[in-house]
Image 1 (cartoon, one colour):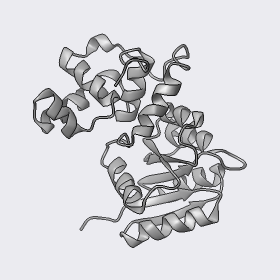
Image 2 (cartoon, rainbow, N blue to C red):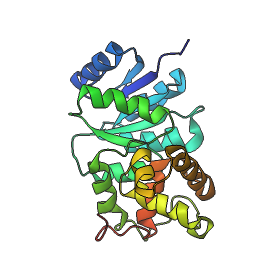
Image 3 (cartoon, helix red, strand yellow):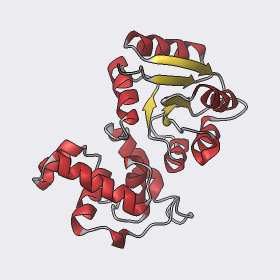
Image 4 (cartoon, one colour):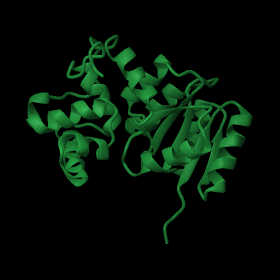
Length: 225
């Protein structure tokens, strides 16, 4: 029997928490805790060990960005997947959260269907890259942060030519099926390439791979489609 997905909702707005809880529980997702600030979120994750955290960026006492850093820094055992929540479609804090290891982000006005799909998607080890807005955000801020210390040491020379092709297409926001179609290969082959890319570059997931592609200049925001 498959265990229900376990989720923590962290948001300082009671109506947002209640709405997300209603949507998630109606589809069999187990909301194991709610938090009104980042400190409560970190404590809730330590206490309940959820699969996914829906984390608001702007919260009192400790914001969602710092809470995400603490959760994903190794301070919490059995690290969950983290989806950032924001009211704004281009928020610099989201970029910082992605570089810290968050698996993606959602706008708070997300549809119920998209919310449910997102929490299930990130727990499979994928990343929430489908919305074009995620790519726009990465494009906007990657160049600004290009000179900063890289999040993880890496060497793109370790990748084969085909793996570089796959990384470029990931950065364009394509999913596995779309990449397979573009390269005329099977979807399982694409999954293998993605796994090799993450392993060779020491990356956590596809989101960090996309951020890396922009940080290193493999993809140029000014010329990417």
